[in-house]
Length: 403
Image (cartoon, rainbow, N blue to C red):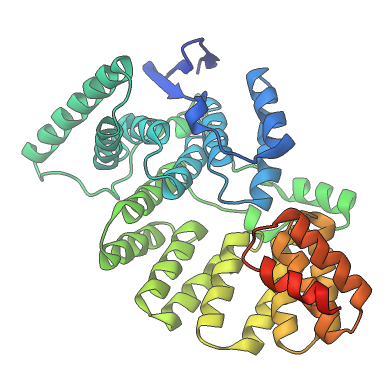
């Protein structure tokens, strides 16, 4: 497969198995988020210099702290797309359109990937239609219309052929599974026992069980196509059906279980939501979103002790994520363990000192529970410095006057 390159027209062209592809990668000013900080800028500099894997490493750090960072998700998808890791690209593009449904470039790139080798023509059609509905530039509009016409012609041919249109779960040939391009493993995957033993010898830790995800690229991509349909569905029952199908096709796809759990929760099916979220955590214990989802369900059920146990597991699994300690601190405080709560909040601030809500909660703890007014004052003042018009600003000013 020929290596992709970045053109001045903000597109990346490459050939994959003789098919011309255009990957929309560079951002316009309108795409950029505010308050992204130095790490995002560093990732972009590395990307523009062609140091794609180094850029991806920085993007991973950003997403550990903020899984909802739209640009980091999209840029990760572009890097995987360029490298031919299409299943990973799909996962990041889908996350992008879930967070920002009108993300024009992500829809275009999803349309491309799903149209390859009739992996899922219906999903390709859906994403290209959404792309065109968003009013793209004229040159990209004509290219998308050409692609869409070709896809619709193939769909008509399939419907009129023997047996009609095949199911979306029918396996398709995927570039990463071609004899000349062996399947790409997920980032961090350890394929052999020797590789795992080398990691254990160097780090003193066993390889994370989630890293071993034995499935074919076509299988996972078909499951991700159903996840995409669930994201696009309007009715809750349609979402549930799509996510269930994704989990049936690929039971090891944690994204399907997590989204199914969230949808069950929205419908008030809390027992089913809990089961799905626990499965997502089991499959991928490093996922902050899975842990957060499980905690939300347990708290919705009023199960304080179970929620506290789950929060402790979250902090043990991801001690490098500030949100895990903040969540644990809140639950420890509600359980009456003020010292444990303060310790957890301090660990959260050691990772990210800019968490305004943690400063407020620490101020309250030191003020009301631990009777340490000097420490309370420090955190109250920090809160006002960072959020002078925040939702708790009036309360904080009153508490400061009373200290």
